[in-house]
Image 1 (cartoon, one colour):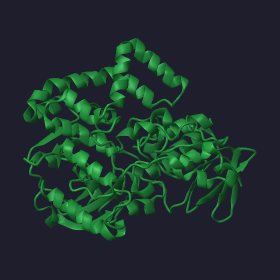
Image 2: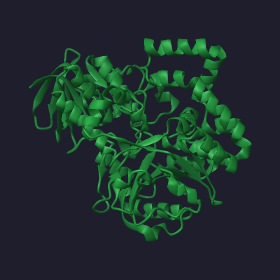
Image 3: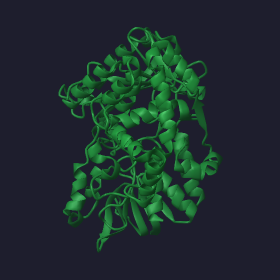
Image 4: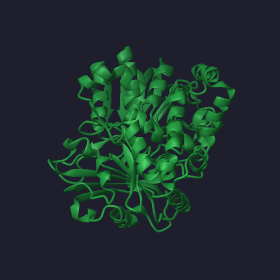
Length: 511
């Protein structure tokens, strides 16, 4: 069998690239080792019948405003994909029973800040204006392959718009820690914590350089760009992408594990499946695979090349646990308004987040892990039987190799500790639980080999492997050292999150 492009891995970026190429007229074959597509975007009834849980990713905001939805939105909608916006995207709750929330209405957000941290209202308004002024530059860079002429043009436009000092200030933001940035701009520990909690989403403890940019974009941007989830579950996006590919003549084949990328004269020419079947690719092979795993897919002669072997040094972020709950009712938060938000963050403060990261990095179970408590049925009640709810709990961050024992041995007990932790902010939660499903870091890797050691991010985003250094030096513009072997996914620029950006960039590179 021969096709134009073979895509290894049916995650969001692989499917996004395949959909763009198929619509363009390329013959595309997507090969997925698992029995269903989606990668880290899957929805399933893992607790009780009628309760639909997004097993990994839930927030589709990046996809909603990204290049794939822009290019294929009408086609995706025709295959059943629709989005549910959130008027109240996220909040942080604190031990004293208060909360600080970001709403899609900037003035409502200002009112929330004024209630809890009036001393930070002026700073919040100033940072909102700053994002409005710099968003074209930031979005332009995040949407450009690196390094590239497109990125250079974005920087040139930024210099003309913001001046040299403005560009340098953006560079400073990109390299700052969330603690440095928040202490420079806010006086209330609650406002600082609200922003720093987003750094923990992406493996940035408060004191790690590079965390401020993501925290700034998500926190201040939350009131400008909002948050959306998939109607009925995040997997509706995956179903729609598959539908677009197949409608355009492409194929998505699950249960088809690729054992080797075939290379001839330094050029990728196809793949060999675990079944022994060989499939030729006349134009390209695109690996939607964690870069750390790619060398093992290549012939021994290619693996020995230093440019290829350095991908083995690609570092994972710390681990993640997912806890899915089927509930009789939403948690009765001590901060009553928290019931109205899609995400509730429990840190609670910068020092707690810093300690959680330090403990996890040392192999210890954090005493106070950062928790992201998702309440999708606040905006999408179709995910549960009438009057019931689902809870999506992401535990950030956890050790990749805990010293207390294997995750299979300690996972359920640690999940008990997490539930007890939530109950400090929402008393009586346990009495509302109908059923629960725990996914430890080990379970994440078993579900998806790309989530190495339970890292849900597809690789750490620390500065040494971000921007033009992602995944490793020389593997830029979504090209590997092997001719016609391209790469995409969270391990490549622009990194983690359900956006499809790297898939779009890879599709453009393949042509």
